[in-house]
Amino acid sequence: MKALVDTPVATRLEAAARRDRGARRAALGKAAAVCVAPAAVFLLVLIAYPLSRVFWSAFHYVNLTNPTVSGFARLDNFTTVFEDEHFWPSLWRTCEWTVVSVVGEYALGLASAVALAQPIRARSVFRAIVIIPWVIPIVVAGLNWTWMLTPDYGVLNIWMVKLGLMAKPYYWLGNLNSALLTVSFVNIWRSFPFYTISLLAALLSVPREILESAAMDAAGPIRRFVYITMPELKIVSLTLIFIHVIWTAINFDFIWVMTQGGPYNASETLPIMIYRYAMEDFDVGAASALAMMTMGFMLAVFFIYWYGARSSSRESATW
Image 1 (tube, one colour):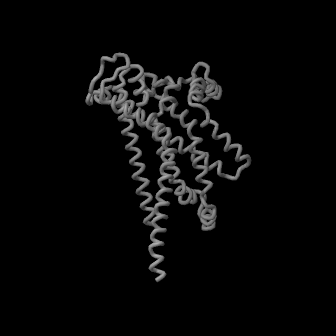
Image 2: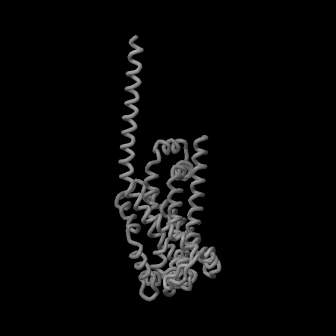
Image 3: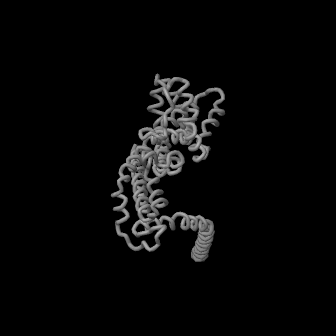
């Protein structure tokens, strides 16, 4: 008899509890929506709207100095880009600039991270010093290196001549064969500390017990580094490389500050071409079309990275 009386009461209590939980979830949802709203507005105003304008302009005639040039362009803007004699060389230089910079940054960052992970004196001081190039603004770094590389009064040319490394000063930024490589070197100098601090953090998180066990099994330093340390750095390394491939490929300011794409377009990359289309030729349509193509390349890189990371996670899960 007691069970028959208590069952409706328990049902009502359970229903009330469900309503209470639903009301709390609704209140939390409203609070979350209020908190996310500023970020959503920020994304819409500063990212979504400009991207939609770029997409719209890529398929329309848009000219900054002649408002009468308008209308649907179909694929004419893309045809203009493909038929430009500077497009394919600039695309190749963009790839060269990106590969040289990212490989150099990773190699130097890994070497400096391994060195700073060793038990040496004043290690904290060296760790603080190594980050200095990265915190220097790009404009300041570019202008200073331009001054140091000047053939007439640049200190680097003067020192190399005095040391007997060169017979006479060399115009590093004014030579067709060395301009892009010189800017790539300066970019490596400025960007490698980001790799250093990231890889150093990953190195310090490698379990010491595993390394000590490998050493007790007669595994040498190189063998321990290749078979134990490097696999532990895989995720961090792939993330760093992926981010910097995108950052470097779309980098405009470093090249513009040091060479403005010269001499004779020898260091012109796709971002420099986009600037010339928009701000020198005033052809916003062609600039937007090239920007869309660049974004397509970045998306392709992202999907390759995503697919590789997903495949790696699946393989590790099967093991």
